[in-house]
Amino acid sequence: MERNNKYSLDEIGNELPFTVPENYFEQFAAQMEKSITLKQISKTQIFKKWMMVAAVFVGLLAVGQLMYSTYSSYKQNDTENYEAYVLSQVNDAELMDNYVDELHD
Amino acid sequence: MNLTENELQQRLSDARTRTSAFSALVKLYQERLYWHIRKMVLCHDDANDVLQNTFLKAWKGLENFRGDAQLSTWLYRIATNETLTFLTSQRARNLQSTVDIEDVMCRNMKADQYFNGNEAQYKLQQAILTLPEKQRLVFNMKYFSDITYEKMEEILGTSVGALKASYHHAVKKIEKIVSDEEF
Image (cartoon, rainbow over all chains, first blue to last red; front, side, top):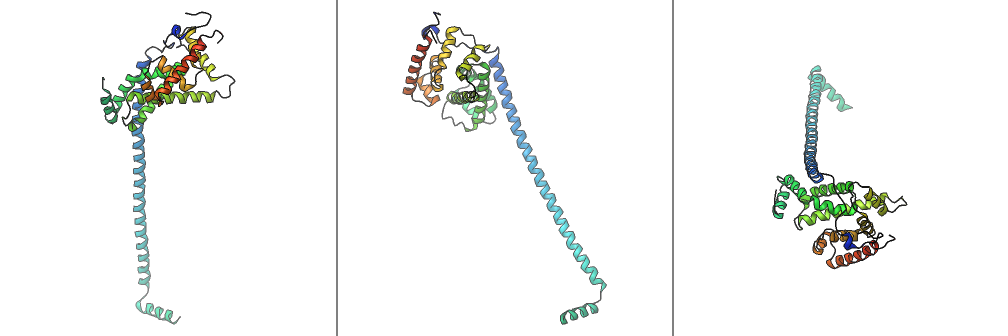
């Protein structure tokens, strides 16, 4: 009942003056379900991505280690081969003379 | 899915059934939470946003939910906090304006296509907006939803005595406004 803009709470009552779009709650529930599912998929994808990154990193480390080992072994062989070559160019007598000269120096 | 509170809590705590149980939770509580929010934010679009945030927060918080409160209480708490956060952000955005945020909210409410109140109901909403936010919550929960003071105490963390006093004062203030011709 409206009387010159003066009201009482009893007159106004407790009905809410609001509405919602048609099918709002059905659509809301469906939309929430979709959002939750997407979040689950996204979580799994992020986990898989980081696992891949970790795997690549470990792989690179392993390859790096292998290459280093190969290089070190090659370098050692190389040095040994060089020494063997040099030694093969001189005879024992010349080696002995060289040794004695060094002692006198 | 018609589940008891315990069954629902169990299914929510199990990763295998969590998603389907959460869907059931949404369907069970969405309307109650929507209206709880809508009474405070007034416009449908804002209520929709806050409701979404509420359920997303609830989903993220499921792992930490220990079952020490009922699901409804827990959800109402989240909805209340999200609503107050939203209103705080509205207030912050309105700082530069010369118009009070409550006036802005009133205008937006009247312009909202999902507002169908008469002049008396509009005046009541204007009067409610003069209350501080926490008191507005108490008034809305009691006047429109008739939530018990005990339930309100669980949700808001305020004693029953304080809630009764708050509601009583709110009613007095609102009665004065709605009966004032000049307002």
